[in-house]
Amino acid sequence: MKYSPIGIFDSGYGGLTVLREIVKTLPGYDYLYLGDNARSPYGPRDFDTIYHYTLECVQYLLGQGCPLVILACNTASAKALRNIQQLALPQIAPGRRVLGVIRPTAEVIGQFSQTNKVGVLGTVGTVRSESYLLEIGKFFPELEVFQQACPMWVPLVENGELEGEGVAFFVKKYLHELLERAAGIDTLLLACTHYPLLQPIIQRYLPEHINIIAQGGIVAESLKDYLHRHPEIDIKCSKNGQRTFHTTGSPEDFDGHAAVFYGQKIASVHVNCAKTGTILQHLED
Ligand code: DGL
Image (cartoon, rainbow, N blue to C red; front, side):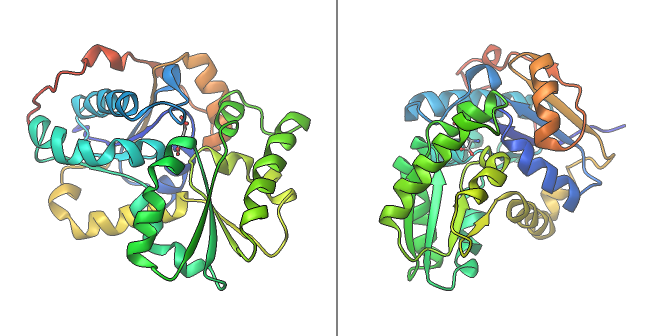
């Protein structure tokens, strides 16, 4: 049986919120999820480190036979995707593809706002990269975008802290900082794949007229459209309905937390992506 799954990568658990939606939209495909839990969070790290870690993980997924890899991580999409697409991939595996989550989100976000003012919550890395400002500007130049970094949220989510006073403190803190500057927003984009796990508590402290938008469904629809437009990639993706989960961290921790993100029990395997090194390895297409 041919096994060439679609690779889904995130620094940790967050990409599972995207995979969950992709699986609902495209259930027939095989998926290999990789969480770099051992080195998460990526958000506060510098450009070179994020590129280096993401490239190692992408090389690992390509080495496992993935014809297509989705960076289901905004931070990696903001800081590593372009170099991977333009510099690394042509050398490693020119016939494969690596896609991110920022562009598909930017393509539709303006459709959700009546006031033409949206808030974008992300990691420090995503916010500093200004990728959302740039990409949204291409599709909705009239849209006013207010960014807010939420550096404490990913560590809380990675540790399974989704409720309680400590979480509430940091949810209120960043929402307050944003809303002080962003009067008039009616749409709030969760531009980090970890944040949908905090959606119930974010909702609690957000004025009712502001709609929260998570990326999972948007990315899933965009992938469906991409595969439709690129039959040469689609044909390389195996379709046996298999889901496989790899983590650079502890499988026990992964399985315990991941069920919450994915909505189902998971049995993951520990892998070491750093083994692939930073040297570009040529792979057959
Ligand atoms: N889930 C990642 C994102 O969408 C961030 C996680 C991290 O900081 O490692 O940006």
